Image (cartoon, rainbow, N blue to C red):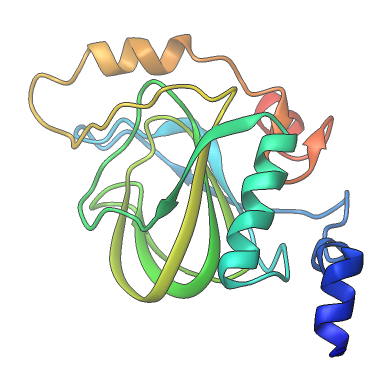
Length: 190
């Protein structure tokens, strides 16, 4: 029996994929101000770079399980919309399980950020995001407590209701990657 098949049968590939996660892992923080079109957020967008080793379908399954174990559910697999958008009824996590992409974060006046397989982004409600280009991109998305999400594009008439929605959202009690008492809850409450 081939080593990879043997380890898979024993369930050790999943253990191996989880090894890079360290409770003290520090994310990159990105802050975006309201630009008059995209509300953005007072909370930073978090990017965990090279946070997990699994790739392709194995990586997608790993992300779905990890997110669900940390109470980020209502997950999906797909890509990232190629237009500026944001959510006002939920925060969002995106785990990149294959390929790479260049994203525009924070709206037109925001920042271009490269992501690749192994990266995890936690996007606060209100923060604009858009895919500019990608190669073989595979993404798992999920929401704290399985919240329903809306889709806003910075169109006239969205505000002030989206601002009220965003202000009413609680800070998630868990980080979708690291769990409780670390990562997102401590950073957003600081």
